[in-house]
Every structure is written in C-alpha cells, then in structure tokens.
Image (tube, rainbow, N blue to C red):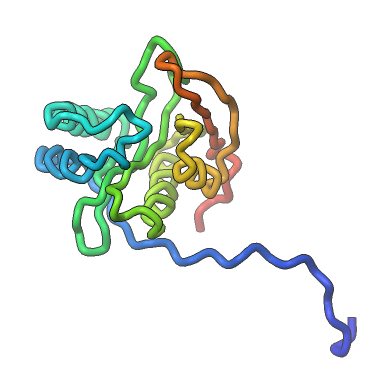
Length: 188
C-alpha cells in the first residue's frame, strides 16, 4: 500500500475507559458493619433476596477470612481510591451442596448503588481474576441472575462464556458463566 492509499478496515471497538482504581483487602470485623450499610439498598440486593441482617455479614466476613487463610483467596472488601468501603469482590468455593456448580470456585462482585457505572466492578473483577490465577486456580465460574444485566456485562467483559441457563430452586432464572484461566495471556 502506498502512502496515498487508505486502508478500509472495519471500525475498531470503542476504546475502553481506564479502569477505576480499586484496592482489595481481606474483610475485617468492621467490614461486616460497612457491608451491612453499603448493601442496605433494596436495589443492590434486588437479585439476592433483599437486604440482609448484620449477623449475616458478621458470619460472612468471618468465613471469608477463613477462606483467605486456607485457600489464598476470598471475597475481599473493595475500597475506592480514597480507601472507603464500596463493596466486595473475589472468589470462594460454591457455598451450596444441593444445587449449582458444586465443587467449583465462584467469582463475584457486589457494590453499593452509588458506585455503579463507574468501572469499579470491572476493575475489581479483573483484579480478582489476576489474584485467583496467581493462587493456582485454572477455572472459575460466576452464577448470575439472568435479569441482572450489570453483572452479566461484567462477566462478559472478563471474557467469561455462558455455560448454562437454568432455574434456581427458588424459581429464579439464572446463568452460569465460566472462565478458563489457562486460556488467558500470561501476565507481563
């Protein structure tokens, strides 16, 4: 091609916005209170059965500390660039034995309503993938309510593929996405 010729290529996908700056830490006792406050909004809990009691977050954060100690990963507390708790992200063994991807490791993310649409979920999910890959995992899944378009979009941005659509025992439409970490490019 000479300098006077132009190349006719298909338009590239729109440039991705820079990811938000996030920090992850193992949940503390105090984070149970922060999670309870951040997730008290019914919109945040729309696909998860509604807001939970503080005692559930106290047990949940304790279980995540145990996962981190035993497995090297957990659902980490998600902090914004100023160090404020805005949610959680991470990975844990699928917690149910009666249904779902028993024996698999699930990744997930949950943010306070005021932090939606700012890139935090994608940035946090990408940090999670890097951490679980470094911990030696070869595959992860994400269980997502079929109508939760925001979480579906994050899973797809990660390169996860839809493996299954099903109905939960509670009658909700759900999707299981998977990501084979061995297929990802090696970190630089």
